[in-house]
Length: 139
Image (cartoon, rainbow, N blue to C red):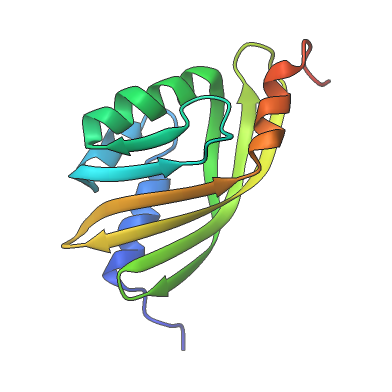
């Protein structure tokens, strides 16, 4: 018998479903207005600590999606009370060059009161940085 999926996991899964290009506006209703994103310092665009939905949208997501045409593909969900850890891959391309990207990520979400409250993101920032330094796309 399959394990029951918690409400917190359902909320996080809905977030990744909404990261499909053209559907990203749906992420707004899943995240708390005071959501926090903690993005690694080595991230080539949008690194830092962002508090509040507008700060996330303008400071991180706007620059990230302007640089990378990617999708976050979750592969595994690990749930413990208010924490949902997601392991997956960032796949797509660099917008300017068309260079393909395929890099693993780990996201640690805090979910409370039915909303995504905090994201701590981890990825191979060196791969993303290197992808921006390349002049031509891969065939």
